[in-house]
Image (cartoon, rainbow, N blue to C red; front, side):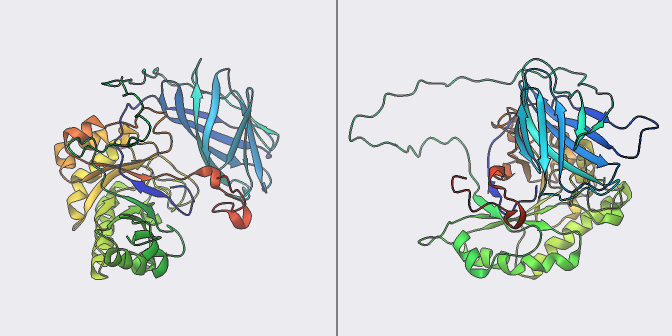
Amino acid sequence: MRRHQTTRTAVLSAGAVLLASTAVAAALPAGAAAAGCAVTYAVSSQWQGGFGANVTVTNLGDPVNGWTLTWSYAAGQTVTQAWNATVTQSGAAVSARNVDYNGSIPTNGSTSFGFNGAWTSSNPAPTSFALNGVTCTGGTTTPTTSPSTSPTSSPTSSPSSPPPTGAADITVNTASRYQTIDGFGAAVSIWGGAWSTAETQTLVGLGPNQLGLSIVRTGVSPVSGEWGTQVSALRTAKSYGSDVKIMASPWTAPAAWKTNNSRFNGGKLRTDYYDDYANHLSSYVQYMRNQGVTIDVTSVQNEPDWHPDYDSMDWSGTELQTFVREQGAKVQNTKLMVAEAVNLNYGYTDPTLNDAAARNNIGYIGGHLYGTEASGRLKPYTLAQQYDKPVWMTEWNLHEADGGGSDIWGNPANAAV
């Protein structure tokens, strides 16, 4: 999850292919002056006509208060949706501007952002980078495999003629079923405060002027002393709503258990702490049970493929498979979910689904909607269907609603958004 106050939770079917990934490193050459920057540019997934990229900028000079990163693309490469930065493009020139999200970049500090894009003629490899006009030089690499063609399908029948004047606009045939929807919902604040009782009742209630949400997503803090923050809201949701399901997502393990010894900037869970992490998740579920809150679904990781400078943790698909196979059964009284990748990248879920022992320890497949449609995965996930694992879309946010300064969670002056 990127830092946004409200996210949508719903169940969607999705599908497609894991494609090439590439890393582009740009850094100062040996002997360069202290002022400058280093850029790590990685194409995390790629499909016919589109790609997703993560960018990390490291400042090697004086602290930067508000920054703009520029680079150039070849013909046919364009940026679409972005997060944690405002990304614009004019011809080949691309500009990523970030003043309010992450603030300044201290010397030897870094910041991260990401975006989805489209391409027609060649792989999306930038040709140069500059931070506030200071050039970051270095070579680039491109994917070693070509993206496959996006699956296509045709309607099985032609649409019927428009109804005559006065006829019903919609006819519901309850005998025809296409997709099971487990529910719709929203997330509580992952950091900071909680919904009030009145807000919770408005969100989950079924009365007039109430929204009737049936899924609530909450975060699992790496600090157990913070678990009580959401108890009142979650307890109210369970008691006031109609069969409300609670889903819990961890953004990171405790810092001491990770390879980078930090809650931030990704870092992997050390293998010698896999059992501790399983017990950590199980302890959270039991703590909530003792508070009268059943945690119906517990994710192993929020966005294992996104490593920003806030709570985050990096996993590969095979690492998730290993953890779930060897430790998943220790997380009691809940159903596990894998793996909430940014755009439902199957590389993070196929290994678990293809491993019978790991597969038996999970109840759900999860993913986010950022770029999912463009990647061709907004469709049934055949492997998940084969093993009867429901697929939940657990997060999306309208980034165009982002504000700045005191309006960081959305600009109320932007009436159109």
